[in-house]
Image (tube, rainbow, N blue to C red):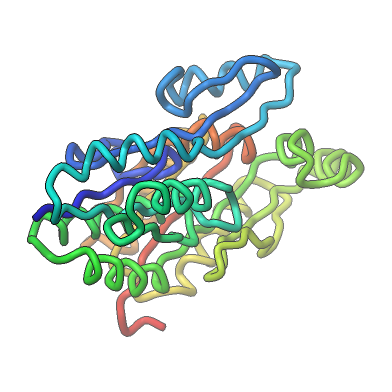
Length: 282
């Protein structure tokens, strides 16, 4: 019996290397009639160039159920094999529902679909934990329970450089985005425990925003895992990474770039910190 782990392309991993044992199903980004499979038809850097130069407003969509079903069937090689499929928060994307539909089509008793209630490296932390447990031979039900426990301790906070891309995607009003640009407002947001992205403050400069971003993370200490993400902002991410490493020298702090799907909503310049609190940290 083997337990295999599946996720989607919004998962990020410290150092950006995707674990070999993992199956990743890509979301889609649409520029008009052009459909790109997230991280398959373009790299993260290529997408950012397209995003900043194009007048088209990108849309994102979940993978079709059939693509999940094909992946599941390919992984269920023996009668006792199982799949644990962990995905971007249901409140942020239709991906979880698409995966669940596919599980019903294939075998709902052997495919276990989990709402991570997070995204990017937060999702990556959960996936890595599941992979370790699967390699140890733990059963699928135990892996799912462990992921659900870890999910409660996982957080993502981010600092957006502009409201322009949220406005282009219809997530904030045009007047709000214009006013934010005029005042150089840098919004801060976090993914709550229910998987919803919520505003947690704003800053008038990048430096102030980075300071408040770090404060939001320090408020969740003690912490056992940390990662820094960015969208076309490696210098800002390196600075954040250095600040995190100085405070937590015992931790390995990875830095990675968010996927095209995330970049299309957040926009270039975005910085984020993903973390897992210790079990006794609240």
